[in-house]
Image 1 (tube, one colour):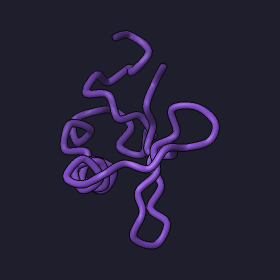
Image 2 (tube, rainbow, N blue to C red; image 1 turned 135 degrees about the horizontal axis):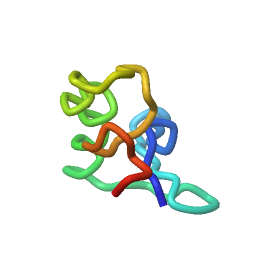
Image 3 (cartoon, rainbow, N blue to C red; image 1 turned 30 degrees about the vertical axis):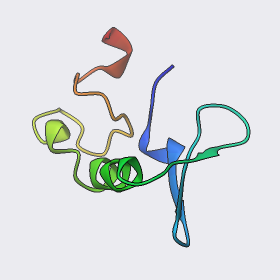
Length: 64
C-alpha cells in the first residue's frame, strides 16, 4: 500500500488517515507529524516532480 497526501485529512481538530474504509482517527503526537509530513515533505525537494502526491522518500514510490 502506498501512502499519499490525499490519505491524510484534517477535519476540524481531527486528523484522519485512510488505510481502508472508513478512515481512522489518528491521536497526537502522530497526527501532528502526519500534518507536518503532508505540508513539508522535505524529501520531495530533489524529486523530479515536487507536486507528486507520494509520501515515500523514494523519487518513485512504487519502487520501495
